[in-house]
Length: 466
Image 1 (cartoon, one colour):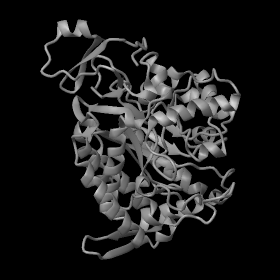
Image 2 (cartoon, helix red, strand yellow):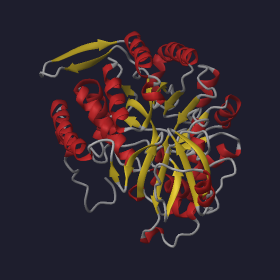
Image 3 (tube, helix red, strand yellow):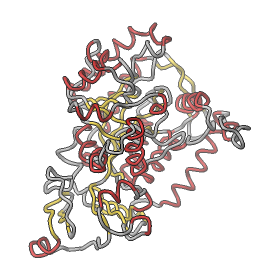
Image 4 (cartoon, one colour):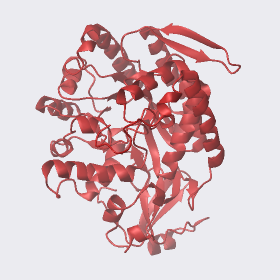
């Protein structure tokens, strides 16, 4: 994914320390370098690590709960993220998400610290710290986005101690801001830069959600504080859930759009919304597998034609999608082709750009990540092409974007360190993490009183609609 978009049939990558030092034909690099170790990539595609530009910390533990009832799922997020989750929940969920990403070749991922309907775990910095610690141990990269929960505030949060005691207390916007600042101070740049903190705010959209209009003063006040902190600390900024008219408002009225902004979902955009992105250099993250993309359409081809950088995000991991970026590439292509009834929309190379170099550009990391180029971080994955669904081995860009899946990634390297090889995770004990997940999930659902959301709805079978 270098500027020439080279596909080298018999290619090799030379790595020294955490950096790529050369990319070229195997015979050429073999003459130039004497390697301490050679990784055999025959019958495999060598790619830059994939980048997931939008997802949510916490969600991996909540996938599928509530069946098809979106309201129940959103309410469960609020209950768990504010009142039923403890430090073990946030650490274990982070381990689970990082492990799934690692095995899927996703070397860099954005994770908002919470979600549902903009409910963030920002009453205490310890939860972000536990999330980051798990990512560091797994070995991948994470951009952790933190910001206030949606109004109104104060809202109750509950802290659970290791010995079973709990304390519920009200958290106002002032406390949330101080916690976010503490998270930036403690975590940004951690693990030699593998952990970065971005700031975020809930989207102000009274034309779509009239009940938020009464809190306009809160939105305006918090916007000024968080965008000021982002500029002072040179942090990226993101929002989750933009739709018609809200990007234009965020730019004109709140001053939230700039070259380090990456805004997610962005469905049914107006001409003014697109113009705001062009004017400011803000990027868009399209989540083609998300429920928002059922409600409306992100105008991806139109944005690209206007010169806006567009990345793909998983919006993972719940309620019905995971971190398999191969799935999301395929979904992206077919989603927009169906809309235009045109199979020429979104070439395969463009969607591969959208999870590599374009995603890195959206996150302001394209100087370090997103392509196999000398001087960049050695984030490299191998995709095993010697499989029935990927044969014959020709036209590799098409094979990777149309037919590959997360299970075809056989090696993942981050910063020159091999974290998975021959499908076996080396950085953490996969079995131990999965055992821990079941235990923590059970205790969390019990604490929240939400075990009933694990029951299948009566309309699961034999009906055309839930």
